[in-house]
Amino acid sequence: MLAAGVAAGALGLAQIAFLPVTVPPLPPAGSAGDACATLANLERILEHGARNQALGTGAVAHVGNFVVNAGLGIGTALAARRRASGALAFGIGWAIGEAQILTQPTALVRDRERYRAGELGSVSPPPVARLAVHLGGAAVSVEVRF
Image (spheres, rainbow, N blue to C red):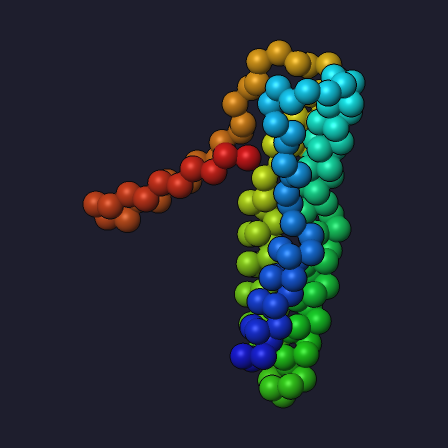
């Protein structure tokens, strides 16, 4: 069971290292040069970032999460000779993976679509999800901006 946790953690770190959802650094503001080349570079940066964000939250990410965790669950069940250990490794790994996928930023995908549609005006605020839990006299509130 411990080995499955280590393997899942290593895969998560590998994803962050090799498939980061990052945007290349922007050129310095006011740098001398061809305005068309600067615009083309900024469009490339927007496209790159939006593509990474879409990949990190799309169907491939969900399928990959399921397949990797199913493999870890089966491997754990075979190694431990206990189906419950495999089911636990799969369930926890899958849930953590889905939480990671569902909380990835996606603002650049929307920005790219707005840019392609020619909507260059003011920026609308991102959608917000709020969750409030009341436990006796205490309340916990979480706000997530997408």
